[in-house]
Length: 69
Image 1 (cartoon, rainbow, N blue to C red):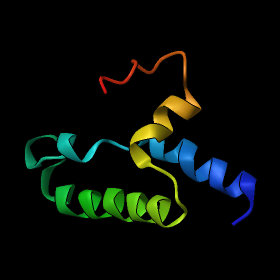
Image 2: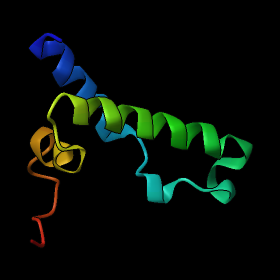
Image 3: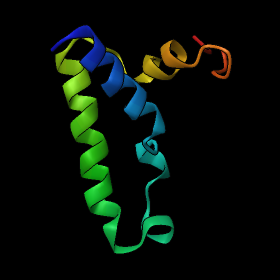
Image 4: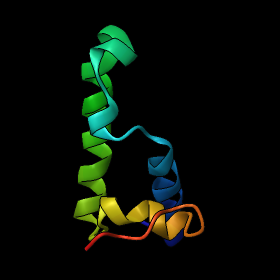
C-alpha cells in the first residue's frame, strides 16, 4: 500500500464510529453490518502495523485528548 493510500485509510477511520458507540438504538438494524465494517478496517490497520487506537491522535493531534497511560 502506498503511503498516501494508508494516510487516506487512517483519515477515513477517524470518521468511523468507535465500536463501543455502535448499537441497535443508534443505528437500527444496520448496527451489525456497521460493526463488521469498523472491525474490518481496524483489522487492516493492524495488519499494516498501525495501532487503530492511535490513529486519531496522529491525524488530528490538536483535537485528540492525551493518553491516560
